[in-house]
Length: 465
Image (cartoon, rainbow, N blue to C red):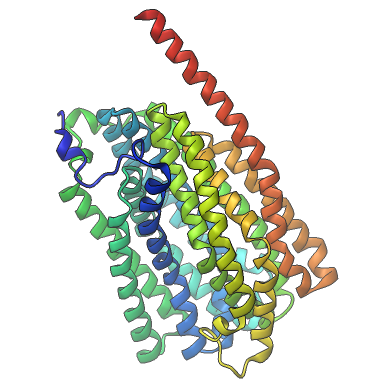
């Protein structure tokens, strides 16, 4: 079925034309707002738990943060990887291949999500023990994170469908869905925690329900509003070659998050040894920092789709220009984010904590002030890592995660036990620096290889003609 051009572009956006800076910003803004609402899932959990349940309950949720990041990050990475061949096929104008990638991505998502749910729920208890989770919060931590993992199928499918939409240039529809599901999440949090006194189990159930609602809605919208993805009978077959291509890109991106998270788990284990106040402070500061750096992260995510589409269209000149513009945009934003982190960090902590918890507030502010100096380094990391993925080089992006693992692991094993909380504040910046040392040269090597390959194809095509 050849889809009419006006129908194809009804909701999608072609990033291979127009001003690179304007296209990046127009795609990035809905994505950024969507990412903010995505973080609200966890942030609202922490605010409501901290305000209405207590510091111990907040520590229980916070102590699972790195474990959650490892698993949810694996899901996000896999789904982002599955969307890259779709964006490249869209840039090429090969809509038949695009739909075949989409269908085979659904098959893989179903299989992987079921297996991942079984594995994570089974291993949650032993892993929490390995992480040195304090006895006074162990049961609450287990209740929270095992419930979240039980809902991974919904999380996986939501992120897969949303990633496909973004690969086609539509960053607005996932935003609207996230706003709706975030409202659902907040309402359910309040009902389960404040009314029914379900504490950490209640916020976990609320998160799973909200994610399931999002997954169902995004599937319905794709069926009704995205005819470009409506596969014909001959496009629905399981194709081992296409699945292999999806896994070749998706698995390293998934492992990149997980490898990075292993370092975070090692770091979290060291923080857990410093007591409940330190855990609560790092939890609160981490939530605030995630919100502050989200615009930088979304610029990076935009570059994965931008580079993927322009690679498919063989517009390397636009990729060069887009990289420069994206770095400028991110660095300008970093100035404001660093200012807020440095001067308003303790005030923002009051969203989660009562003013009587002065020690925890001071520790959270100290964490944010230290990291604020390194936000430009983090923004560069986001952009180069996602650009590499957009070019189809997900393995180097994963290897950057190994550098982060080494940095965080070293801090957790050796530096924090010796220097305490001061070292905790420098742990993440050290990982960002280590990743950039690898990523920046890797990107330029990959770009050079891609340039030579495209030039060779163009030469061969000219000779044939």
